Length: 184
Length: 67
Image 1 (cartoon, one colour):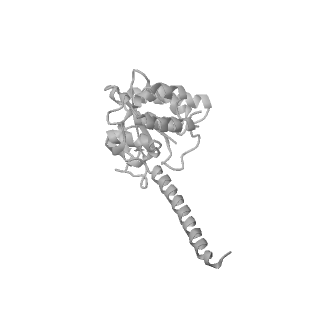
Image 2 (image 1 turned 180 degrees about the vertical axis):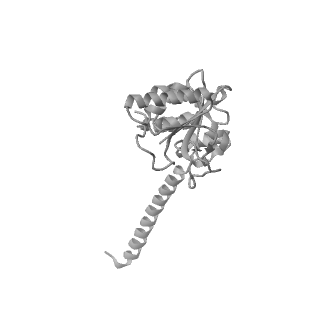
Image 3 (image 1 turned 60 degrees about the vertical axis):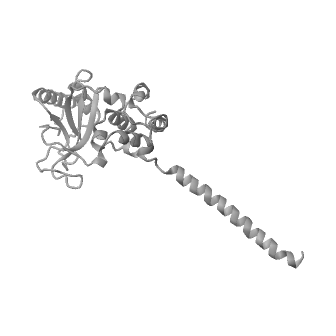
């Protein structure tokens, strides 16, 4: 999504410290992202949140897969609450979506970060030749490549920005072929 | 056929089979080597990708759990 600078997956919303994939306790699987407010608004992200799922109309069975909007300031909180109210009015039902402060985010284990990108050969190796593991996770190129490999975005978007990933010709060929499989 | 020629026919047959097996083994080994992932040290990219270099310093953060 244009305007998203970096992404990371993790666990949030719970009360225990240092959750892990095998010991989530009361945390939920969460994606946290940094975005450029000049290119993307918080409302745009809320729209994607609502469009990407069928909001739950029943109480959650497990906290691992909750539907939660985490806010970072009063503006985000207000926009999140307004968007939830609008969705409930639109559907005429109570939605089991929580709105919580984002003060409990724990990054997931490295092997969960940029999961699709990690299945490549040349592309992953080239980025890891530049970055250490943390730099790899925080790379905008890595986030965008991972998104395309997840089937998000369009071919046109990919063609426009693939040159900015700084890949060698061989790695670019590998990526072109993989993206062609996921984005028709 | 002359009985004295039989050992040579047998030896020739074994040699041909051994040669064919070596060729097949070599092809399999080459294919396996080609499939090995390249070591990170062999790859060409050594500089920060342009899109990373151009990332703005000013940003906001958002987080969602999406069921």
